[in-house]
Length: 173
Image 1 (tube, rainbow, N blue to C red):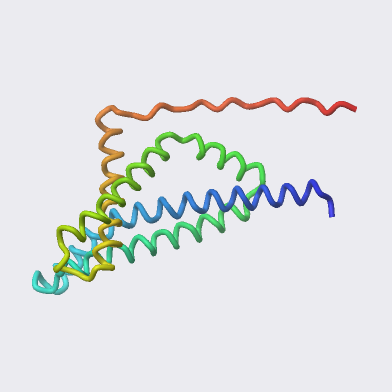
Image 2: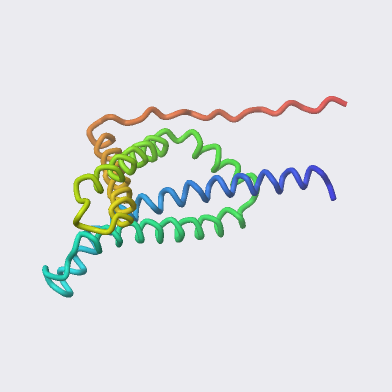
């Protein structure tokens, strides 16, 4: 087999893996943000206030985040595995230099770590410890995403990095 073809296939696989990880992060963030209010509204509408519990809400938060990561990752894999090498490489380079995405992920990570520690500390006897830690991380990730978008709306927009096309030199004979 042609070594250049093998290198291209390996590079395409690496780019696809990178983009799938980014999509899984986004899926976790979005679903961790949407799940608690949707779950709460569903439980209150269907069963009433007495059926709602903190433990179930925290469990729904981390299970929803996990489901979002799996769904977004699967869709992203199907998209990029069947795309051309050039399109996938271009998308990877664009996403690597997307400062807004980087800041959103940073805020989400910071929020997840803080809430994974604070939620069990404040609510220890109110829910299962696993749900407290993982659900707290999901809530914190969602709060971090909201923080990023709030900062962007109030005028603290991350700087954009303009990518310039690089000319490849002609091979010398």
